[in-house]
Image (cartoon, rainbow, N blue to C red; front, side, top):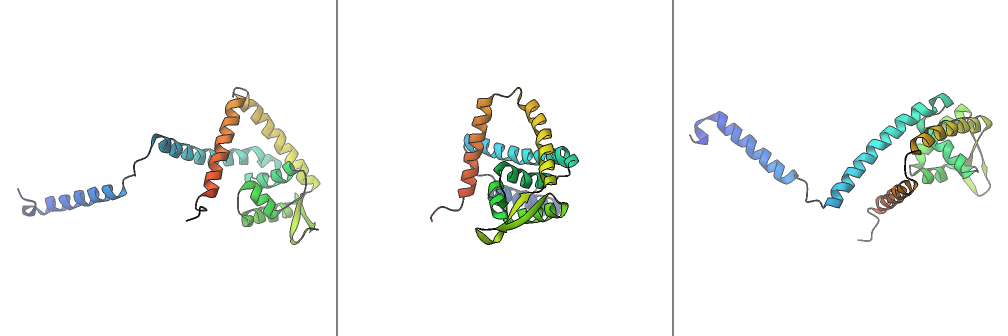
Length: 181
């Protein structure tokens, strides 16, 4: 039977042909084994990020924080000194605007205050209030309990090597598109 004798077979032929063409054009380019492993790692990091944010919400919610607020106050706490919004954004690898929104929320909540910066007219310093210091201290206690239990069976050298690999990949991501053409 010829394709033209039956309209259903013509339709099926066209559908199969279009699907084949689409598949040929849309197929993945050849990937090396390392590229496949990198793709798997990247998607695992995406999943880990989601789990970390969700766990952070559960972990620091009782301290009056969200994951986003914890990141900002934690950055200030780790530095040991007041920071500007752009400094916090660089530390966290996120936009200044995102940090500014969180800082505004933290200020409204009474966990940070803004003060004049003697080195810059417009970039004010963000510092923890006493309530902010208390919230961070409690969040750090909860985190440390979890981290101590989690790392009890993990090899320190393996953790250090994983950190180095992730930092190296972060550098490649940061540099993407910045090369001279």
